[in-house]
Length: 183
Image 1 (cartoon, helix red, strand yellow):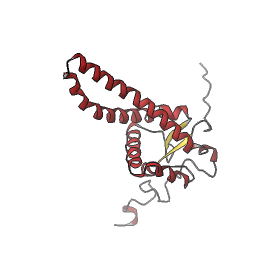
Image 2 (image 1 turned 90 degrees about the horizontal axis):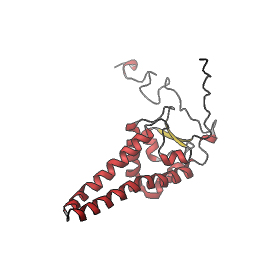
Image 3 (image 1 turned 135 degrees about the horizontal axis):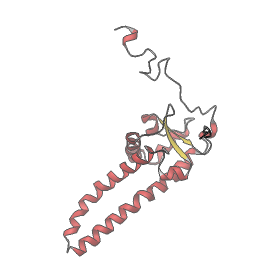
């Protein structure tokens, strides 16, 4: 196999190949994009936790009342509550990060935005995997998962590094002005 057959030719196959584009967001040239991101992420997480929890609590209350009305038969739906909660969280993160704002409701309130390392917006599968890896990492590393963000310039957490994403402060991101319509 020659060097050109190995996929390491600059065609974008490998991140460390010479032809691959650099990171879209440079913490040395654009430090304002990363200022306060970790603190904002904590508050965004708490807001998202409320957004996720309210429908779950309402679902449990519905099942409880439905069980009383059906003389206990409705309580058999409680076995669906936990899987439905997991599906709801994955769909919420996937749809919101994969949406036009590339952010969950909590991230939008805190002026945060998730982007890929090369600057592209998020998409459904990326948002869903971001949530799954976050919950897995937080299960094993609990508060220590935030320490990873203190030791890199882009304030990326462990699951961000694994997925190749970066969370930026969207309130200072330069917006490209749209051209005025002539019609």
